[in-house]
Image 1 (cartoon, rainbow, N blue to C red):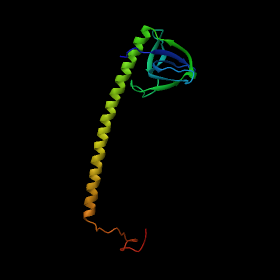
Image 2: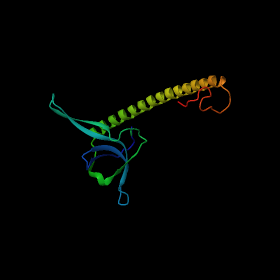
Image 3: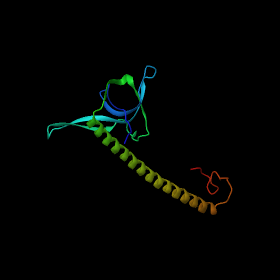
Image 4: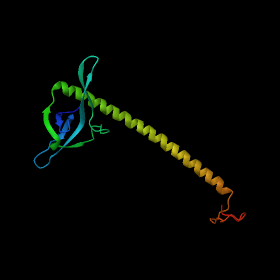
Length: 155
């Protein structure tokens, strides 16, 4: 999936735990770092089995493709560590799933956009036809009589 990834796990000051690929690390001159494929670690507890579990979800909603980058200010990071092999495999599977879901959503949006475009074109065509039929029976003048010449009242 990713060649020579630089994957890190961050614990942020707000309590979030994020696993992501670091594209560019911060330095003394630049406190911001650039990351992608950022997944938040979310913990839970299953009372029936009395077991804790962890899942991944996209850290930023709708920032789900490999080409989308996130800027992270390093001042918000409490701790950083390299991920172990097991966590890397779990994160990789979650990222693949995230990319697939994003692609499916893009296809769904494209279909809906095409449907809406066709509906709009049809509606505009119908409006144009209605205007043409109304215009066919009316004089071409722009002048409106006010009040109506058949009545002397305004209302």
